[in-house]
Image 1: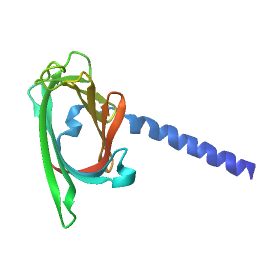
Image 2: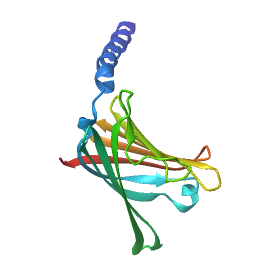
Image 3: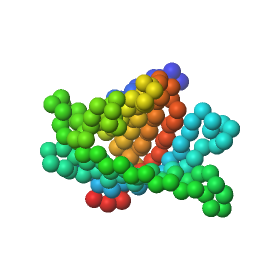
Length: 181
């Protein structure tokens, strides 16, 4: 019996070690190119009382000069009449160029976070493309939005976190599938 447990544990260890490098294998930004669609759940501190909201996503990533662009649309349905909820649609497009450090990219439109909408940068690490947006509000506080888009065999996992003055105020988790080039 001990021998069976030992062999089972050894087999599990070998499988884990074999899968580890493949799972963590780095990719370049071209692996993210294409059109992605999916949905997710948005939660915040009040979700326990008021419920979570469902969001639909469209993301297009493609080459742009020496860098790439990311265009994302969030469709938020919530509030209003349950038979006819309010629908809000927000689209953002940002082009990135290499920042001089491997796998770090600076948004072409990035500016001073205290005056013109924020500082935007991207990072590619392993199989995750992260876009960060940092802005300083008029009252001197700050907001940081982080979009992690991680490739997997099933498509793309999205994790969005919005932090205000050090506190997480919203988190969205979703799944997307590739629907076009």
